Image 1 (cartoon, rainbow, N blue to C red):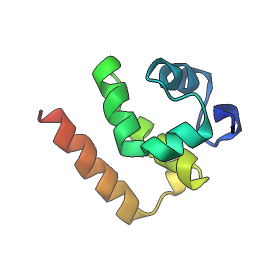
Image 2: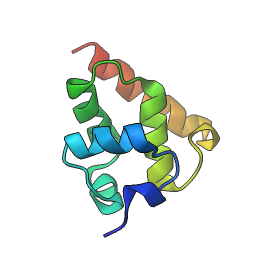
Image 3: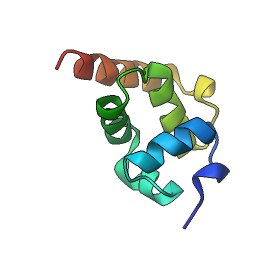
Length: 86
């Protein structure tokens, strides 16, 4: 089981938040996906923002969150906006 610590963009605070929603390993995060993990985080921590979603996707893709493609960022922004409306 891979450690969340070994993933890019996952710091101490993000790791703590992920643990609180049942994500304890890199495999858990990859299986859940960035959008579902973000959705669960947003329910528990309303102040998480789009940058958190980018960080989760970057961790899964093994890239710095600010290096995600514009296409991926647009898709994630749409998702983030859609859950704000609910």
